[in-house]
Length: 452
Image (cartoon, rainbow, N blue to C red; front, side, top):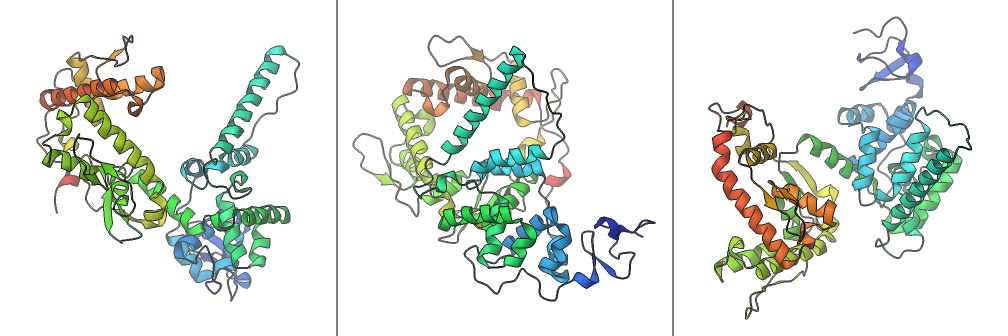
């Protein structure tokens, strides 16, 4: 494929071809054109200088992505031709909206959301409002100011428990700061001068100095972005993580319950048996549940309200303590990949999405069960005394507790929690019996579920 009548080197990027239409320019993999004369013999990014961030393929990949987005014309000068080809093959461009989402979720980046939103707002075409003395507009302006002040207070509150290092709680960390630190630790001032202006270098330098040993490495940030990007494409596939201490692999999904359970093997988070007269203490809630079933012949479904509340509270406290050690044993870098087999939701794919009773299509597992509940006219009353709200789906009742009574399921009293448990058990039994009558299993097995 030719580049066309207008030479692509004028616009820095070429088309899908791998050879530029000018003999004195080269086209690296991914579509970047650059003059042969500027290809360096000694690229700036090298592994010769030890660094606290660690020189790794992951760190280099994030730096490459940053330079590609901010100053693509410097790629060859920073990395060299051959390394650019290798990095471009596995580069995953992060969309701005996706990057902002990651900033909210990432442990080290959540405090930088406001500054990132402000920076994004500067680049969006927005009509400037003329000053007005209108009372309604003044009121609107005051509301916006209050919202902004509240957001800033919320942002600063996020780091109240992040330590007592002087000034660290006020530092906003972003991928740009991490990339700055990558070159700063290697004392590559030339690269810093090319990527950041003098004011930015001074500002970022102060942030890095303030953070000290708490500065997240580029490798960790890249690993987190990589995991979040892949997770969106593999929601129904089990994740594989490797424990940093014992090097065992674990498959999990959702919020990583199995990972939290394993942390109890390495940390002292006691789970005592709550049965009167039993002094047994375990390291994990799963072990306690097995003990109740084998030693006391008590299944979860047959626990009394006090016993069930005790187990629920103990598990909640354990998970809260175990999460504090999540980054120690399962940091973003310990994510290996996804299981080859689709193990979540396999049985659900066998259900015919068309309702046999009314002909409506219900594509998801949850929607099909809610639809059956509507046909059966199921109705469960709110567990809060004096509230007459009713719904046929226990999960919708949980939403009601949260929005109407400002209480999550874990905050329910002993009596309320027991009632909610009975509702869930009853709903589960009915669905097991009635769903096949409305959404029978398919005769044909989907091809992606067939074994090779």
